[in-house]
Image 1 (cartoon, rainbow, N blue to C red):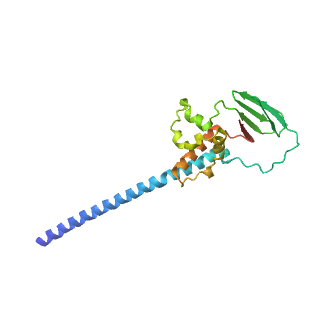
Image 2: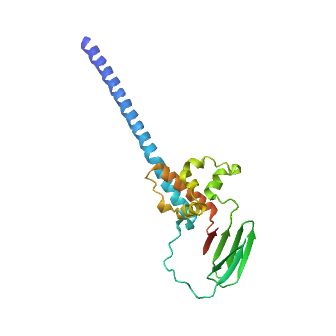
Image 3: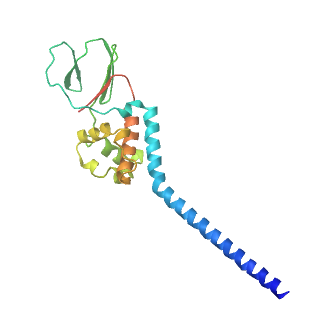
Amino acid sequence: MRALIRVTAWERVSLCRRMLGAFVRVGILIAFLTLLFSLLGPPIGIFVMTRMQARKVPALKVAPLKLADYLVSNSSGTTLSYFGYEFDVPWNANFKQKVGKNLAEVQFESGQYVVFIVPEDQSGLLTEIVEDRSLNMGHLRLIFGDLMKRPAYDQYGVLLNTTPDSIQAFGPRAGAVRGVTLLTIKAIAFLPRVGIGSILV
């Protein structure tokens, strides 16, 4: 009878130890998965989001290219004049124009599209977005950082040169978040059109 009691007590201790060991292993697994998710979750989310945006707005993949040919063409084009500025475009087809406050849109019958912008606030688009209280985007000041100190032309340059491929999702977190934010603004500010060209003064 004593031997039977001893075996039962040993079985109870062994069962408790096994359960405790199982709980410890499950706890370690949960902690590991939590850590893994906190490390890999945001980069994977950024990667997926940039690819989804690029699928919805293919124009996000386009970035300005450096001029390869500096020769001046003698072909006849069209001279446009808006808000005291005059410039030539290489197309001579008929066009429709829409002129608003500080913005002119010109659409040629041959398919090209030109947007001419003369913003009132010359501090730059990114600075304007952050400082416009009606937009409630003041928190973006931390994301843009030194970009807000750059001239307006440079701010547009950074925005236009941001593409899904330029965002390093698994690189520094601050750079990835900045890239996604710029890509989102680019999608909103520059709607995809065929043959579009933007001129900013």
